[in-house]
Image (cartoon, rainbow, N blue to C red; front, top):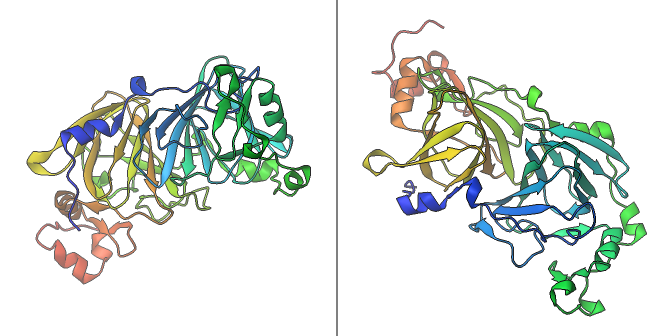
Length: 390
């Protein structure tokens, strides 16, 4: 299969800058409830679970997952609801408490910037900004069609007092804005107590295993073949699912299927991740610093700068490299479509330079000493290899 070439116009369209993200302030049925009235919802890739027909979607192209943002001032709460597909919180800013269970009383975990937490499907969850400042969370959702969400019956009841109703099609009706109240037969049916009590329960210990703390990230300098090349030095730390790491010792903390993998990336000042291709769609979200993205090969190279809090979407089957042009280390998240292990295709220049330094990729897809690999692999680089002591 030939590589996809990205035009300048498409490259611009695949870059979502922070200043171009558009918030919807009445995206959910609880958005007029006191204590929840200042929520902002952003749909960055796909509509996600928004219930507003007015929601602005930055990139509508299907990716196999959705990506959004929950932005909330200090003291604001997102109320109890259920997701059908994966929901992963990647905390960019703030201090947050996540609660879960039939009435939100089964347990709580507190998370801060740099933490990632995955809440299981089919359980009630809610969260609040308990910090002193505005908070910002990137939210990943499994699938292109998330199925919407189920609200706790109490939330539906209180929302009706503010003129908000939810149809069976998961669309919000705001009677205070002049929309007619739907007939009872058109409204979503609240869950019964029996249905709520039948849901799976999670202990605090179980949920804590689904939190990857900033301080517990396992970065590896052997996660990418090109990291051994002077001037490169990129590192990866797995978070959930099978990503593109090439370190055989890497095991993600969260392993159940999500429809995507998530890895932290880190590049030192002046370093880079060399030219590579993936068969899957991949999104980079910059958490600190800025990176320069280069796409395509040769004279058709297209370059974009992705700043902190921006994101860029790489199409499947496309070449890309990532360079840190700043004076400090850059950190970012890589989200890649699919639950399978991703296989990097490196450019010939990367393969040859790594071979000269004595490294290549073994048949299982991991970085290994070239001297220990099968003869047919050694023969590919026979003219490039310098004597290496192993």
